[in-house]
Length: 114
Image (cartoon, rainbow, N blue to C red; front, side):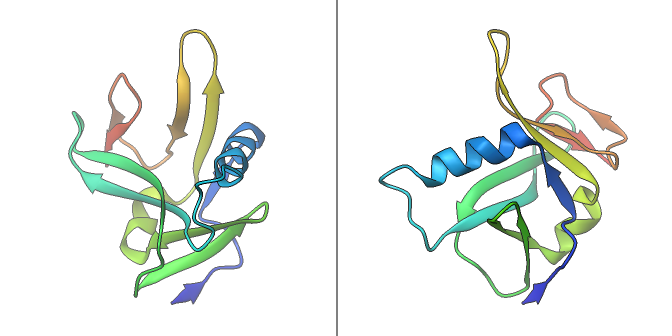
């Protein structure tokens, strides 16, 4: 496992607050960390992955505002420099992704191509 001193992604203040709210839920398993990544699929080719998960061999680990995060090393090339925000409005609710590495993205903002 590799620990990074500089986070490859950024969370906005509202995203940090939402992650910490989720971690404060009674059913939350404190052994799990926030996993950021990508997976094949979606209308543009790749979809974002954001979930709580166990650490796996080959993961890189970093911290954002006290939140322990994980990412597969191979995903760093797709996500470096990305900003994750939390929207809680009437028209949209959920995490949004601003990825400078995406050449195209879909209308829903949850999938992209490089």
